[in-house]
Amino acid sequence: MDSYHFAEVAAPQGAPLLFLFHGTGGDETGLIGLGSEVLPGAHLIAPRGDVSEHGALRFFRRTGEGVYDMADFARATETMTAFLRAQIERVRPSSVAALGYSNGANILAAVLFTAPELVAKSVLMHPLIPFEPAPQTGLAGRDVLITAGRRDPIAPAAGSERLSAYFAAQGARSRVVWHEGGHELRREELLAARDLLAPES
Image 1 (cartoon, one colour):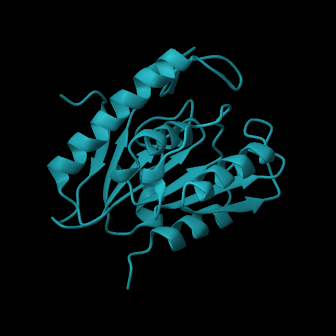
Image 2 (cartoon, rainbow, N blue to C red; image 1 turned 30 degrees about the vertical axis):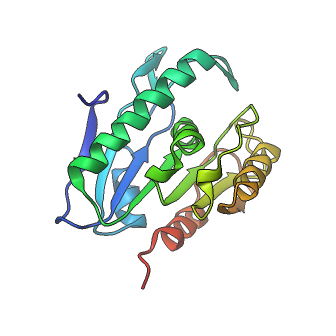
């Protein structure tokens, strides 16, 4: 049984599948337009966060800014991994990519740490992973784009650099695209995501 309520934009059989993960306070509809922009013609699936923080939806609990409830983080990782597996089996796409913003980027990163075989190309927009992930050889050959703001007060630049270095050390093709602002999304991030996700010609 699926563990998340989700929004879906269907595409013809054999189209690429793009998962979309919203940030804290968003919902399953918030990134659908962005998904259509960065990968036109894709089958889109966007789950709704199942944790409420004072009414703001997110994917796992935290005890403070940048301080995660690691037991709930593990629960969310397991639940989301199972959700992705089930949706991939149902849709049977030609390829699988994923994009997450802020808290959504964090749950996507968690899936990559544990089941990297599920997603070939990932876009992590303003992630914050405040711990050192375990080595994961399954990341070799995967594409990971991190987008970040140099003055981001929520997801500091040094953390984005460390996370990109982690992915590269596991053999992934990893890079960071920066803008000079904070935690907001900017146009150059969307263009970089579109470039990464473009189908191989």
